[in-house]
Length: 294
Image (cartoon, rainbow, N blue to C red):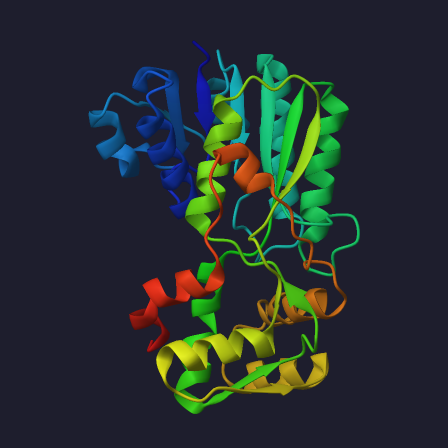
């Protein structure tokens, strides 16, 4: 039986992947290795028989130990965005550890159109993809589209005021539920894939923000108007609202990326991997109607 490593396992996405692996019944709990900077946060999984290891992406020694004896390693991208270059450095540390340990196959969570994306941290993903390919190890790159859950970062506030300010214009985004991505990732980890591959994982439909606003209005019973701004105007509004300065360019880049058509791609990769359709946005919003109210 393959020994599967999940890095960043204490995060929301990592925990969902662990849950999917355990629920599959296709891998013994002891053959699932959950790694985190703080393994204590994974105590509940340890009680289920999952192997726990420390993995600090800024500490090469912990990574060397974490990757030892691993057949399949899932490197979940980190959230280090405040310091330019740190995220890519962390990822390269993990890739180096995977190479040194002779991991059988590397899996990595990237983003759609990594080479052309306007998202501010896209170069981190592209650089990681390139580092993985340079190792010569077999790989599966999973280019995850935007979480449906990300809408709760902006839509509830917009719904309270009745206005959603955006610079995405008529650009579309293929939102996908986090749980669907986790299920697809677990399925990929449990599969017997041999060739190198890059898969883009999306929801079933791409929407403009105006179309999303119409759905939100219909489901919530409250009006939501979309006001399109320039990137500069949007940045100014965020700054005035007190958004941390280092986050403003990143948040604006999300809208610019949609406007430029870099995240409108729709694929059936989630359905192909899991054997079931991915959740559509209407169903997701209806299930989470209470969250729309903020």
